[in-house]
Length: 317
Length: 317
Image (cartoon, rainbow over all chains, first blue to last red; front, top):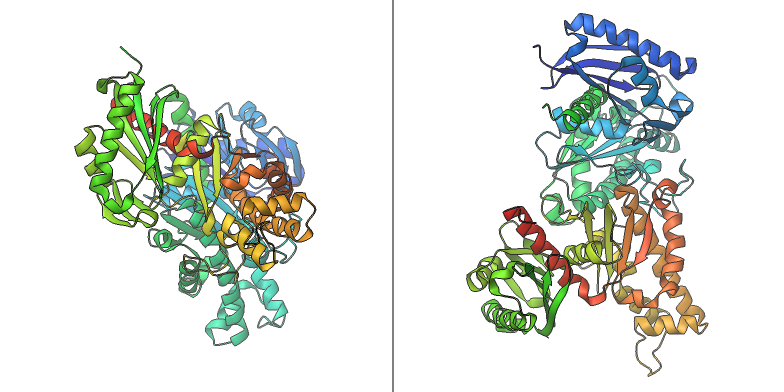
């Protein structure tokens, strides 16, 4: 018998990343293709089926080698019932996605949100490997978070656990999309960094708004305002990480998202800010690390979710 | 064979509470006696042994019915090695307490800190019963916290999880005993309430500093400053609970400590403040409840810890 495999699927607003992954974690073959969410969930499922068959052929695996499918997507999900309540970036509401997928693929389907899936990926194969408890924080348009305890996603009672982007770090601070004020994501997302750059009159070399990468480049070149903007983001992020660590006492915190490309220019001051905001016994037992899987975290995390689901169902692994 | 039992011990700065508790949760017999911590750990252990023998006689149980002993105390503990690093209220440092106790009692000993033990007690027999995830917050001299997931204490990597008293809710706020600023316990403990009362010129009927109970009585009688002081505490506590709930997504938050005696005068405004500070999907799935076990929570939680420890060792339950 060939090694058993799963299909891991990361559904982004722009692209879908899918891979056939062995239960031991080897990516047999992977693909990225446009989501085209505006065509609707049925067409999305049909395209995923076509891609799945192509992936299988390329990987040399048989359909009978495939245990299950893991799917990650951004949105409010009812994981228990396999239901998308609202996926803002796909403009989908009330979709029985697991039912649609299982009718097409005839395999067990496991679903979770993008932040949880990315955290699981990093905990399995990335910076969070070999940790008992991992908090993964993704700095992007917003600030996402996922918690992995003993190798399993910790979801809480209504799959909302790990919402570090919406912890209040500055009562009365900037208005957040969630309707409240001073949430971490209003002060420490990539978007917040760019907005602070605008407020400080930073410009891109082309004359427009400086993006996050350009702000880090300006800071490296000695631009005081750029340095200050980064320090401000780091200060707030340190408050948020300190709060989360005092509650969760994790052994690893993994920082993901595009900002991590800045490397030590982000991580060094962030470690100092974290240390200033967590209890000594908490930060001394916690490694703060940049993510290592990049955009593959979701796909790998989805594969891991599929493997865990199949193991639970079949006790085969 | 009689029903199997455990000894649950809650070591406070002033009194020790100990009970023989059956594995089904019935308190067979209980005692409270002075801790006299200044006599040192060896004398403490000797006294506990004497009390244990008396309790056994009263309960009608045999020594062979006793599975194990659970011990809760305030301090920095190395739970894995059964070691007190520092117990401030007992003035003990570097005590191999589990070794001392097992040499005297000849039973397996299980140790944890007071906040975790109280949380476990409330989750087992108190307000947190039947919940998947419970956060228990004790408002006292400080603000303590314990997390119980699926009936087990969640300790984190260095037994510091649940330290909600030291999450930053007001960056740059009042100086905390931990050396940082704006920790929840500087703004929302019973001590903080009394201090705010002093700042607002509140007096006890006897003319001295108004204690927490007197501040609630003043507020009930229509005293504006007393009402404002309570609202301020409630506002900060709501920020802290909202933060913790957005991260943990628990189904129950239990509020313990003497302030809970104020009843709805505390809980009603606190529920409103919590709702304003948590994501909608988080607070809608979370009950915020007053503790029901009072000062028995620690003793019962210690008993539960002993039962769980014995079950794990012996698979007898």
